Length: 252
Image 1 (tube, helix red, strand yellow):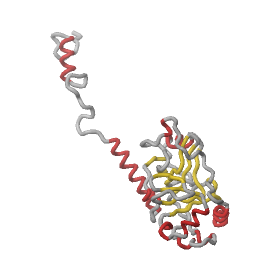
Image 2 (image 1 turned 90 degrees about the vertical axis):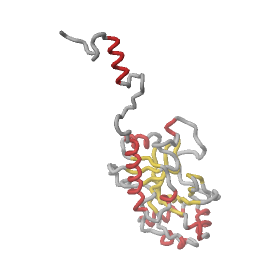
Image 3 (image 1 turned 45 degrees about the vertical axis):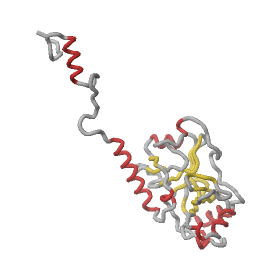
Image 4 (image 1 turned 180 degrees about the vertical axis):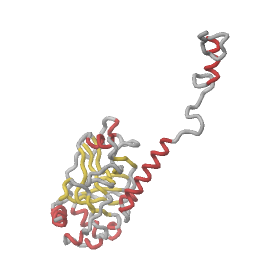
């Protein structure tokens, strides 16, 4: 059944067709929540499933966000390869050159195929995601890429995607379901996808630990002549309470 769905997805792609996306392609000016700053979701970033996320669709997954704006978010899971290869499913010239299996991109629109590729320049029919990574749903582009042995080395195909309505992803992040990490093209196109989630969990843990570090000794830097300086406080108390150098009143 899975192979049948994948075939339908690929054959349904028309010339230059794009899978349904929750947003426009142009940059969106909006609230701070939409800006791709550290710790916030953004186009080209990773969503790393926390250890507590038990949803079987996303447990121990890494989602690469390929779109994010005021209309929602869209991404593909990059660490769940299937056992199916393109050459097993359709007859396309050069399909056997694609050694990588088709990846399960997410539970949404599993009948639609999405491709990611790395290129120095934007290929016709593709949209930029992050650095030299582009996405497309064009069958014509796929056929062109399959005819180029070098291009096939930097190509991934995904069945389906993950999608979030406006505010939904932010809510899940706030509940601790996801950790947001910087995107890394080398991890998107790694030949060892099983190592991606453990590696990013390790990075996220180290990043969190560094943020928790405090200087040795006093946790608060004491500035001379301010309320943080014990000498300053003692002097003020002595002035306010003559004859009581400790600054403490006597009940006797």
